[in-house]
Length: 278
Image (cartoon, rainbow, N blue to C red):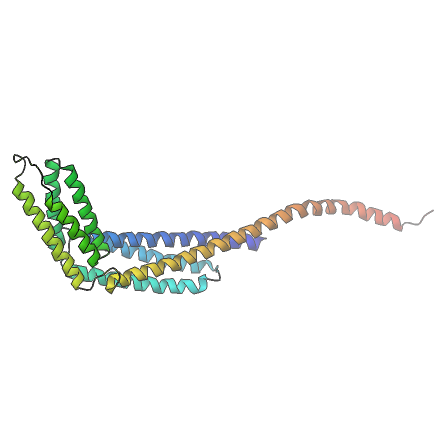
């Protein structure tokens, strides 16, 4: 009973740790996506922080000395998959940095600046419909950064063409139309420069480093999910066993108490039965 309770307690801790591992993995992927949409170096630090947390949590699981059938094999596999995923992310960061991509300067900085100029102009002139078109353009822009492909580029081209052909009425006292036209040209030009450089470097959502990173992340997630599930199942099984043992004990214990209390009376009866009859 005590052994089962101790094991159940250890399994609960392990189960909690595996949930932390999965949460940290999701935060890693969030940092990855944030970096490729904003190119903020702090996201690289966050990515490394969550990776280190996962490594530490795996050590914590090993320290508990509780195992599932799957965990003995999975833990080393997760460590190896994590290492490969982190290395691929570092390679992509290095490549993107070599492109001069930065949220404030370089191709991406110029792209953002032009987009903000367009947004400011449309807001000043209360062009709600055009603002919605711009939001859709920026969504595809971000999608391309996360999943670079010719399809995303073609989607951007088609939507920008429709956006560019819409005539708007402006308040010249607020801003001249020429500044809006120049901002649109700059936005399109910088996106083309950025996207072409990205594709020429072999950065694609299904092939090259982007594809490799995505596949490695998916594989790592699958391993973690199996690990979490294995501890949940074993923990539930062990807890059920503890409850069953407790039920049996609650039934047997009163009987034992009664028998122990009745023993002196039985002993007395035994002694009297041995006395000679007069």
